[in-house]
Image 1: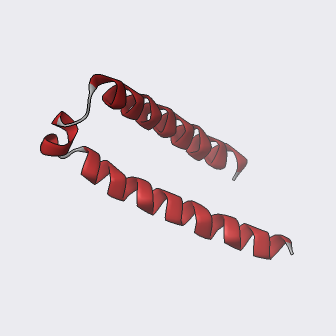
Image 2: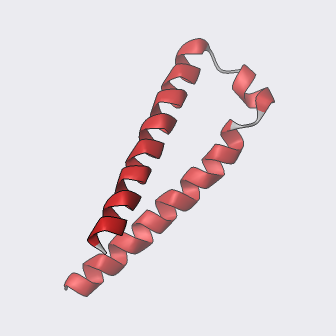
Length: 66
């Protein structure tokens, strides 16, 4: 059971990270970005920064636990 959960968790995280990478490429498109209002851009910025920090924290924990 634990192995199945770990495998599902890995696959889920892989899909999330793959999707985030695809979104990041889209978010860098200047034409798309300039069509967003200030509120939308601020929310996007905050979410991206928060996600980046959480990923760094997770990678740090993985290094110290492993």
